[in-house]
Image 1 (cartoon, rainbow, N blue to C red):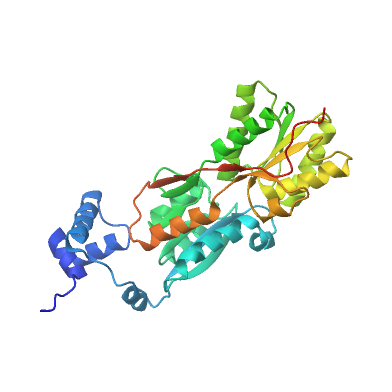
Image 2: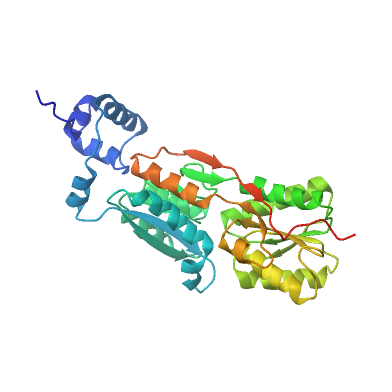
Length: 334
């Protein structure tokens, strides 16, 4: 005897709601209360119902996609495609999508993006969106209009997130430099509004306070040129610096160039720890010690969460950040 698969009508009947309400819940659309959503999800579990994603796509006339929403800083958006972080995000997502009939779409907006721009992207989302570098306020607005969203950075409480321990990673980087005998430890921070940069700034300051050392900081923009210019400013104002914590590898590579241009040596005169463990760390001269951010694993986890169906509001997963030692750190010369 052939056993028919449960349908959305069966889900609606068991949950005691209309078919339209059941459909709204399953599509994470607004218009249903918390208790109603709970009844629908209980019915889905009891019946073993699985939506036909191909039928969904055909009905809507749209190919299912996972959107990647990224915030750009500054007037030039051309750097987005060449930045190591974003290439790693895309690689992690594609490692999951290559086995399913779902495409990837990259959406970039400026840090001054209007609410309408965020709403338009949310309205066109199908399989869901990975929020790569979106501020908490933008992420909360996006999530109110599209529940199928997962942030890769610290975000608003309601927004599901796959987070790395950026605070702990920055704290550990400073502690590692201090353990090598470095006591004039400067920092080059990222963009003021970037959630990762904010957390790494917090970790640096926490470590410096605990060690009783002065906060010696400059701001960068997560780009090589920004790291180069910030390092020159720091060296001019504080020529006795013996270490730098730099909030991303691309800026750290620029900092190495700035240090060596002044006749100093890395790591003998100035030790450097970056953040990310990207290709920029490996290609720097000398190769950079850094805090490894597991970007590919995080992006893959976010994508699997989206493809699994309903993403629980406020869902959290935390990934550790580990120290990777290379040639840019050493004890000071005797």
